[in-house]
Length: 127
Image (cartoon, rainbow, N blue to C red):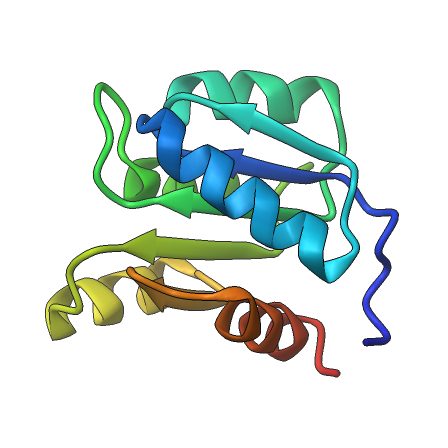
């Protein structure tokens, strides 16, 4: 994998167990610099203070959804190029289309494993 394993990754999910699962999968893939946020608002605040190499965000969260976070990130001059992967339990076509239009780099449907995560990350970075 020619992806920079030292880059900081931000995992955003309101479900602690899901954060732990994604963190463990990332660790299996060799990523160790992993931050977490419980919702889009917290994630956006963290992104103001640190440059992340990748954001992996759940879609369904309150008060700010992953989709809202994606729109805010793409609308922010400093953050607009940050690679963004959306994670969701729903594979609704309209959600995928909306996320693509909003500028998501890739999309993962739950449940998923390390191999799926690795292929999605590699696709984002053109490996």
